[in-house]
Length: 465
Image 1 (cartoon, rainbow, N blue to C red):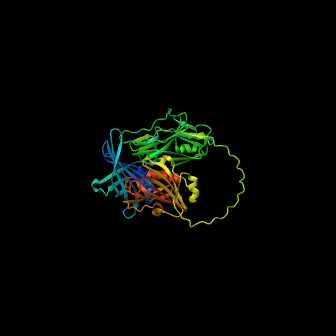
Image 2: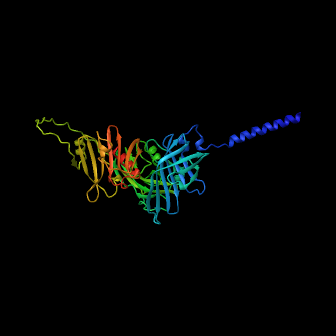
Image 3: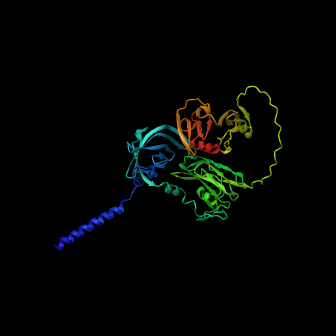
């Protein structure tokens, strides 16, 4: 009888230990942490399971939608890139898409890149099983089913790209009176010219930001251009080169400074303090091969002029009424912005010079009642770019462009929906509405493949909005 009791106790202990061991070893994958489907739980970097070469970077837009980039190196000099928007299909229990843009990139030994658009509006499916993503490209089914395993979170991915180069800011004074405490302190980094080439596979810098001089409390834009990058982060470098901080850390260190688009190619600084004088900024572009930095741009801050007393206006004599003929609402031209604003009755912020495509120059303003535009011409004087704002016209009626384009799509900039027409890669006409005003950005209208990239559109919208 005693032996039976002992045996029963032993069996019970074995069962308890087994249950505890099972509970302790169960490690949830990111997709299993929430009940029901939530795209945010899938965010991160996934690596192709067999060769470990291809990657998927998934960034949630909302609980049902994600921006997805697939990168697949073909050889030392070629790689494929897919950019798409995935949406969860509850019926299929999968992430589906139909807007993929597939680009084949080829690199020379000198690092020069050439891109070939293989297709746009591609479709496919991602299915999920136990932390793995299975990708099926329906546009090119011969690729078969590819398996990707979860590699790291977005935060881990970003940290992995910069941890060895960016000191951690551990304290930030509220008054900006002293440098933040950093660990470890990097060696001084002198200003360098923009690199024109990078090792095969790394991001390529096509344009570095330029030095800017601005009055205290003013605004400045810094613009960079790149190729083959999936991530951008702006950095601030102290005058002595001893402190290098990301835009997020800079926002804490300079509490009055407003930093806009610190993760885009065009960064806008507002309410610039005198304490920023002598600092430099640069942009670090990253892909799954590593990072490349632009050259640095010097910020020079000058003192704001002292306010002067405004004399009381002299009394005016009402003019004698003069009969006039019918008013004809014709376009007028001027080189003076104030004249165009007054004549149109609309406030207007033209794009800054840094965002204008290379080879173009400012031609002038055109305006009429309720509408205003800035025009930019090529070397022979033809207007190839105009930026327009109106209070009663929208979309195609505002652009005046009735050409037929192969693709129509929307992008989101600062919470605004920008409608694009073009070849699916570059946009010839980009329109959006903000408040009661319509905006249009038109470049090489009617010439598909010669429009503005999404990154360039983002820069324009941030300038004029």
